[in-house]
Length: 119
Length: 107
Image (cartoon, rainbow over the protein chains, first blue to last red):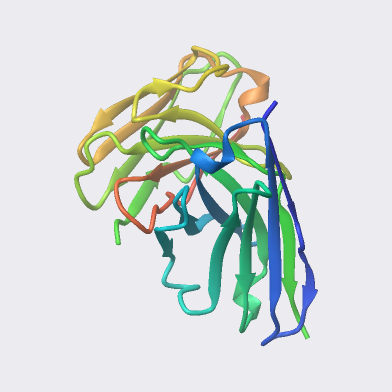
């Protein structure tokens, strides 16, 4: 069955960095667009970034542009989010999700990993 | 960026009620509109994609309609497991914005 398992979350000080990972199984990862979505405590969903299947296309929300970098390793079936210059506004649960080819709907989600930015 | 609004922001309903949630986008987007359900402490789950296509495994009491800028999610007969927050999302252009959510709770 399809599984997406995020890891790498934790507590970090303002200005710090963190790298999230998402391990995929149960589907053809190398054919799939992948995204990161985040949700601040008690708030709604925020689209963060996506990457095309071959890494040729990436896109970012304005709120993270220049600070976050999305990448993937198809051989390892893994998605990454390198986060730097973190601020309190980046505190959230981060989800990885697969974007289906047809309408880019997010049909599979991981369980999420919590990132807390606090001094 | 495409702006998304949802109405109502919350509603109280009873089991068996028909529930309708509306999503409006600031730009026309054909059918690039999806609906998700999220329960507390859980990841969102896809209900409807392409405005009206039911995701595999989702009960048929859920349905979606609309195109252009106005979209609707309907639950024909609310079940106990449907109390949750519902989000629309546009995938017409980046950033692929979400609506602010509609919380459905028990009356």
